[in-house]
Image (cartoon, helix red, strand yellow):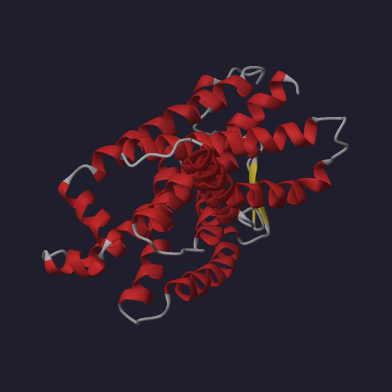
Length: 299
């Protein structure tokens, strides 16, 4: 695998590290099965691409994309906590609605950004030769900042209340915590991160497309599971670190499989490779538990 291919894999892995952190909040912190990611990821991309193509500042576009993603997550939580719709069904309803909303925002199936300014433009020369190094570096800075901010937040009183809401809602309510508000805030934060990932993704790929959100939740879950399996931990800052590393490893594994000539896979096999890797990630904890149990019996 060439250096450019490796840097490209790391670039996409860093984008999906933000997705994985968002999925970590919903699935692990709040214990809320959320499929909104498949809609909020392209929502962030659609909002950012439309604003940038319209001449707006890319940094402002990313901020507005995060607000739009937060609104989507808030709607999912609102359907659950206020209307008592099942968590999974709430997220499916919002995800379906976002497909039409994204089309409305873009007013077309795709929005090109070729030649438009991006958050990476100030650091990339006119020849674009340094893009394959600059873009992963900027994304790495964003991911590190997001990870550290999440660590600080979840160590605060509000963050601990949110963690208690997911761990034991009844106990949290007994302690005077408004679990409904914590769920609304947590889901908004989760999807804000995912929408930010979508906004950055379209700027790395040169445009937004209505179908770019397909499978987002699968990638996020795979990253979380791979990270938890490789670096099992109870401390939250280690968990967020493992999630980021899981996303990077996941994308590098896909890139290696598609670029390994002896395997014989091509670009059209991407979904097959993704399914195999996700299946492996889901089975890996069970295999690891069986191996530990076998070592315990022989000891």
